[in-house]
Image (spheres, rainbow, N blue to C red):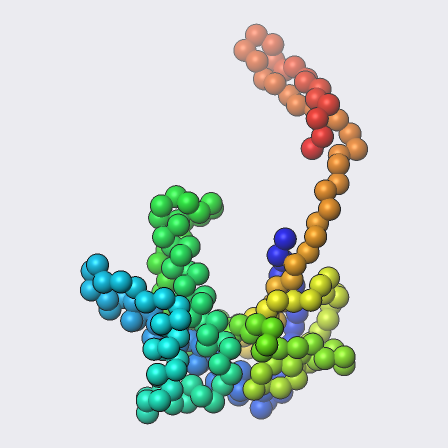
Amino acid sequence: MKLRFNYRVYPNEKQKEKLAQTFGCARVVWNDSLALIKGLEKGEKWPSNGELQKIAITQAKQTEERCWLSDVSNIPLQQSVRDLGTALSSFFKSRKGERKGQRVGFPRFKKRHDNQSARFTRYGFSIRESGTLLLAKIGELKVQWSRPLPSEPSSVTVLRNKVGQYHVSFVVEVDIPFIPAEHEAVGVDLGIKTFAATIYSVSRL
């Protein structure tokens, strides 16, 4: 089972500037990709994640309007496109009734005043022996380790909330053992003639 482990981090002023730049670039790539999809004609084939990355990142870097995308790590930019693909997939599955839980709406454009985030995969981060978190083109961040990680994380998302606090969220794989119930289950059946009757079951919870 995949779980998230969240911690506070404390970037210095220079790192805050780099994070703000990374957040902004990831947001722009998301918005450019979403605008491209929403601008397609009815019946026109949607581009794949790879095609979107080529247009919104690789080709965009070669333009004067988006050349500054090269100043940040490519990994959170690619993840931004993948996250959009996941959001679109969740929308259509929800629409068809193939997704459990609350219905999911169509992805929206991100705003600079909302909570900001950027996701790094294995090749974009590492945890140092000193306990700091190294992020590509950001540097080593001080982490407040409130509890140890149960396993090696597959990705980490850096977040900045509206009050200016920074957090990181690690995705880890955890094996949760099955623990059988120690006592028998007891059910209560409300009937019409009999007010209540207890039913004992030997099955385990």
